[in-house]
Image 1 (cartoon, helix red, strand yellow):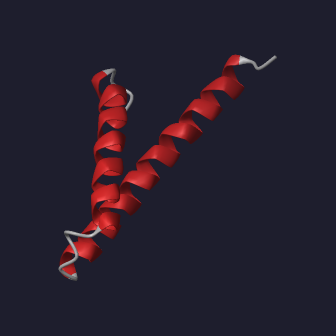
Image 2 (cartoon, rainbow, N blue to C red):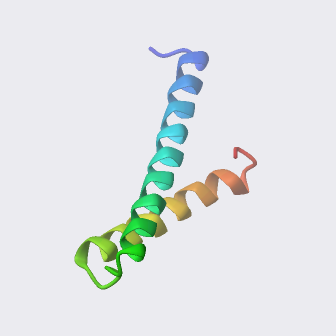
Length: 66
């Protein structure tokens, strides 16, 4: 069974992973935009992922965790 410290550490690791993925997705979108590739499937998939990450991170922010 996991104690509260371990649980908190895991929670914080997940939050850090989400924030890092969000930064990477934004960087990839910017790169594709600079190349004029905004109509590609990759761009559209990254845009969908960006929206999902933004929604998830917003929940944490609303609760004062970011």
